[in-house]
Amino acid sequence: MSFLWRTFLPFIGLLLFVEQGAADNLVKEEKLSLPIQVGSNAVQLEALVVRPVDGDKFPLVLIVNGSAGASPSDMHPDWMAQMAHDFAHRGWIAASIVWPGYGGSTGAFMNEAGDCSKPNVSMFLNAHGDELAAALARLHTRTDVDPSVTLGVGVSIGGASMLDLAGRSNRPLTAVVNISGGVYHYAKVGVPASDCSLFQADLVRNFTDFGRNNPTPTLWLYAANDPYFGPDLARRLLAGYRLEGGRVDFVGLPPFENDGHTLYKQEASVLTKPRIDDFLRRNHLPAMNDDEFAPLLAMLTPADRSSAEQYSKSATEKAIAVADNASGLYWRYGARSIEDARQQALASCQKKSGKTCHILAENTHLVDDWRNKVPITAR
Image 1 (cartoon, rainbow, N blue to C red):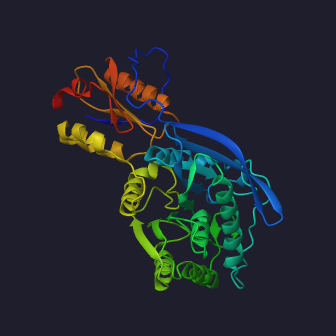
Image 2: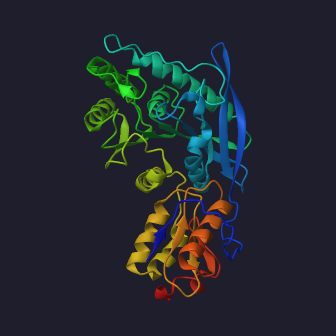
Image 3: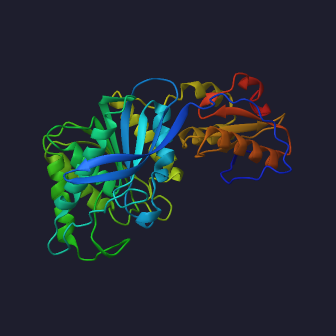
């Protein structure tokens, strides 16, 4: 039997066999305040940068949040830390930022887009596209950034704003990943206004403009139960963007949990990560390499193989633990560091099996003597 264990367990009273992992610290974090200039306004954006430990220059991925899910003061770049870690493990330098007026970012969030009778979506998206352009300009000055390759990843209003930026004549983005992208009008936060068809039509017009003669490859991910941009509206946005020549790989995902607008969550990685990697590979951009993990999959029983395949699709940082002379896999994903993932996988294994446990894999790197540690049913 295999187990997915995602809850932190106290280590008191647990006998853990702690050993050097296979992956160790392959990426590192940096928290900073990113100064940008937008017109006459100087703003400091709260940012989290995650990059590989080894290497001098890396392609840049800029990640930006949406606006749903919490009050602006509670939203920080750490919300997207899992996604930033995923990209750093692919070989990117990942910069997660939050909008002006959000979290620790200074300035005010521009939230004007007209209303249901007189929409002005372009005013909203152009303003935020300007902020993203300013963030890119600042990040491109870093000595560890290769400015020739830049990926934009945006969630909700962030996805729509990235498409605004990608549609500009100077084509500043190499590619875009749009997750649940769009803008909606509301009187109460989190509740789209009813009978707002003119606003939706204006949103479609803006997306159509973004696609005009635009060769930038884009990936769009939308869930069937997105309460703001459901399948019908997503199809209209897609048709408009493609009508003018925009390039889109569109993925309509099944319902996700109770709110399909939360595809940014680490729990959605099993749905989103394989699609993102496929898109990156098709466009000759750095993607996750899971080849090292394949020999383990070939040895496992069907039940353990299914569990391990889910593990391979899950968010970094992650680890698999196994018990001495026993069957089963015990794994933890989406931790903030590989050390945390290692300890939590071992704790889960010890608690469930009552045996001495060992690390079998960290992220998708197998430990050196992994063949001697695989579950006994696979030997």
